[in-house]
Image 1 (cartoon, helix red, strand yellow):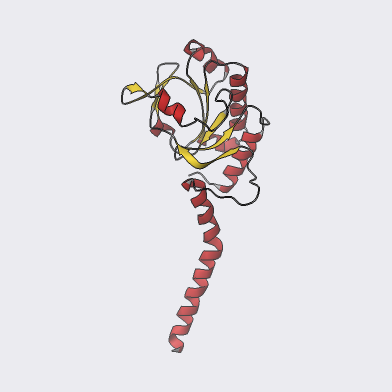
Image 2 (cartoon, rainbow, N blue to C red; image 1 turned 180 degrees about the vertical axis):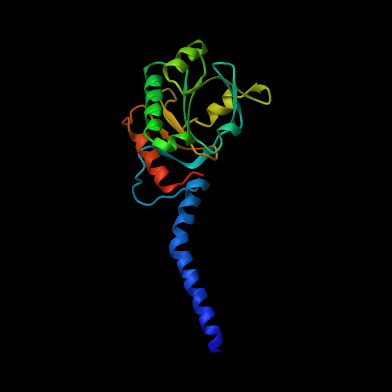
Amino acid sequence: MSKNTKPNRNGRILLTMLLLFGAPYLFAWYFFFSGTALEIGNSSNRGNLVSPMQPMPEVQYQLHDGTQVTSAELADHWLMITVADGCDDLCGQALIIMQQSRRAQAVNRQYIKRMLVLTSAQDQAEDIAAKYQGTLVATAVEANGADAMPALLSAFEGLEAQQQGSIYLVDPRSNVMMTYNSDMPRDNLLKDMERLFKVIKMD
């Protein structure tokens, strides 16, 4: 009987350590990526939490210079995306916020992509890309050779009162998880990204 006491005790100690140190991480990871609603008091995030998270459709983006980017190529990155009929002041403000928020993440900025999807006024695309360098400016969206712009826009439908000037944060698993409207303070996105990279390590 005494021979089994030490192994059993060691097993209990190991289980206790796993629960103490592993459970919080697994708990946070699950709720972060599952899209499950979690309400605990007042949330500390600066943007509007999308709960449950909204999946993005698998599409192919036609960029201003004729190149194409697929959803798969954007996977494993955080995507800051805004949609505009034409790049007015609200659109320009959103692009500046995305640019500054990414730049502020230092070495982690390699895990962030920025995109503007133009639903009209595609003739502005080249000038916008030159002004906001590093921003992917999409002029068309396709899936299986057909127009997929409506499918893309449906992923953002109802998340903000208006799409013009709003920023949508898409996680590395292609889910819309946070939104930022044009009335929010300029540093909201930046602060949320800083917090995200503190709790989540990118490989």
